[in-house]
Amino acid sequence: MASGIEGASCPSAQPDMDEARVFGVVTEEREGQRIAYLAPETNVDPALLAGLDGVAPTEVFRFSAKCETSRCSHFDGARCTLAERIKRALAPVVDRLPACTVRATCRWYLEQGGEICLRCPQVVTLNVGSTDSVLRQAATAPA
Ligand code: SF4
Image (cartoon, rainbow, N blue to C red; front, side):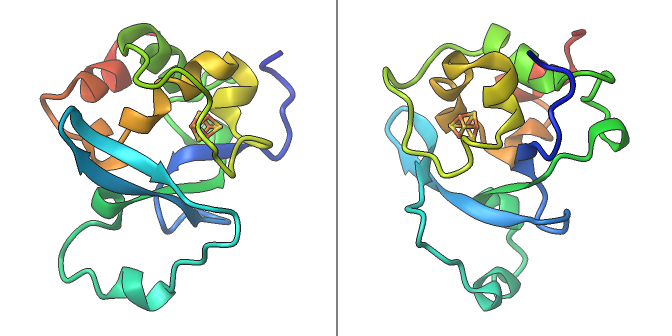
């Protein structure tokens, strides 16, 4: 199922990647940070991204972009190992698939199925790069 996905999207992308677009907003909930998935017609003004005044865009938004495949350290030549580790390390935080506009091309979903979507709302791209989070552990654990 995993190999041979052409044109897949990365759902934990950086804003300067090819075809980057915002699809979620980071919210603070009692249980921690969660992604609010944006409606299809929502456009985020680039001026808003430019005006974050030192705050990393990935601290505020989730971006999708064109998957960089072999240029990404998480890609093993066939699939995204980060998605595998997130599915293994994190518990579901919702009990139904979020209304997410990335799903049709999302590499994580295409490779891992709906189980990854039940975990996805707790993924904040910035925290994947932090030093102490479970996300960080998932990002760096052996595949
Ligand atoms: S909710 Fe599912 S389809 Fe949407 S970005 Fe997350 S893993 Fe991909």
